[in-house]
Image 1 (cartoon, rainbow, N blue to C red):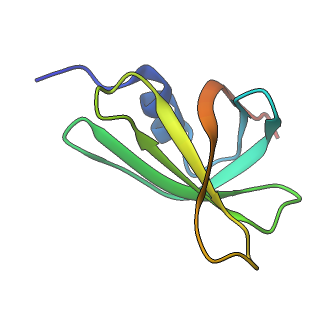
Image 2: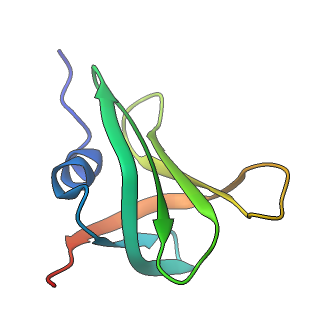
Length: 93
């Protein structure tokens, strides 16, 4: 079986505790995942960013190279791709 994506594995291991994520070049903050699961090597999660009312979805790419992030504004109709997770850190409370 192929290896799990290391970023996805780190997010999964920290969940359900808060984590600090850097997404692309524009988003950095404390995220909390409401759900996170692996389907064999495919990762899927949904959560929120502190101070933002939007819903965020996370999934590994088809080649398992990256975790991509989609954002749905509470007033919007659909999902917008916002980037890849560049780093994951545990938040110490």
